[in-house]
Image (cartoon, rainbow, N blue to C red):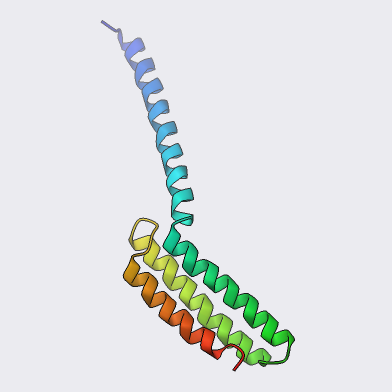
Length: 113
């Protein structure tokens, strides 16, 4: 049998081990969430569109105001993606990915008209 001091020490050790494993699991989950394939696809596409906007602006194909408006639309899409992911434990569904891609298609068509 353990005396009260030993029980307290054991409880402290177990609590520390549990906390360490929980934080490590949380860190792993966070890395997984950021690398979820559907989120990666959407975010990579947003990054490419941002690059295209920059290039079109440099080449004079779009005005500064158009570039600002296009980037605003892309920021709204990114915010929507983050909100969707927050609702689903760090990932987005296929239907949400399709919806986000449709929105990105609309912005893409506006770049370099």
